[in-house]
Image (cartoon, rainbow, N blue to C red):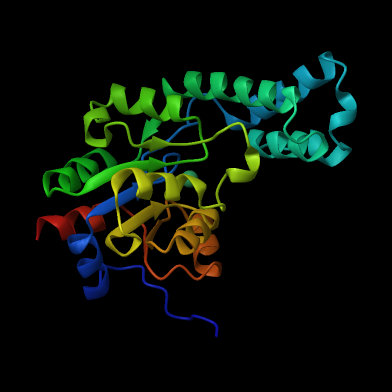
Length: 239
Ligand SMILES: [Mg+2]
């Protein structure tokens, strides 16, 4: 059944969800910050391709894959060719170094800091569930003074790209560590892969769309709750 009535404005259902939730799982890049606002993702992808070429690994990527603007696609492509190899581990480590650099010039998502603090002040337990390096997420949160709101609960990319979202691995890690029942939890994400992971983990989902393209993708994925600004959620917590 096609869903035709996605929600872009604040509703009673959304209010109930955000005020009753006890555990909030945050995607990092998007809902918390734009990680590659300063250090661009496409240049990171190009650099990875150049490094593969220079290491005699040109054959690892097809012509199309060499033109990827997304470094995560490069990682997935190498893993398809050589799953579980040292090469995958090396590409992952290089990507982590670039994410750590990017964390220094990331752009905070409007209202994200305040929303983290507001949920924490209400006693909600928070976790990050990201496809990025957990070290990069931790570095960014520390610079914003938000690390203590999350404590140890930052779950991100491992050396196995198959466990990236839409796989629910990071969400399940967070739920287990927090002792959380999925029905008491909510994920805030900005992409269809976040929604799929949330559905598989059995947690509710709010899609944050910072632009029309993101909104369209979330609508196509049939996200029930979509907000165009985190201020909508923040306002709800303060009512
Ligand atoms: Mg994201």
